[in-house]
Each structure stands twice: as structure tokens, then as C-alpha cells.
Length: 77
Image (cartoon, rainbow, N blue to C red):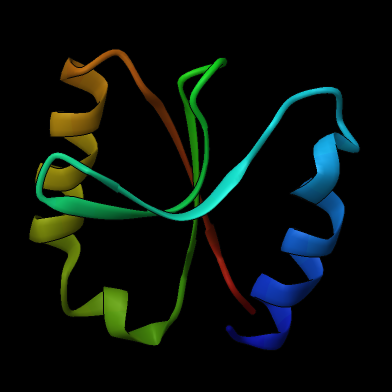
């Protein structure tokens, strides 16, 4: 995990927000960075490699949206 991922995970884990989050959770053909299954909420922290993968990220987000998930993306800087 990057420093930013560690920081986010320290805030999401152990149901500190009242909901259970999972890290690196497989779903469809993807691995979700952080996900709350109950809320159908996916949180992704994107590094610079995502600048070159924008089409894939859009496809991935559409697939997750079609499955009923809300995807929140943040740059990890």
C-alpha cells in the first residue's frame, strides 16, 4: 500500500464510520481498492499510472455503476 492508501485504510477499517469496508476486494473481473458492500460504495485512489489508463478506468467505472455501485475516485497526491 502507498502512504495515502495506508492513511485512508486507517480511517475506514474496523467500522469506524459505522460501515464495514473491505480492501482489495475481488468483484467481477476487477479488484476494488476499498469497498463497502452494504452501501455499494467503491473508493479508488489513483496514482499517475491512471493518466494512461483513462479509457480502462471509465470502462471499469461504467461496469461498477451498471452493477449498482457508486465509484469515488481521488488522486493519491
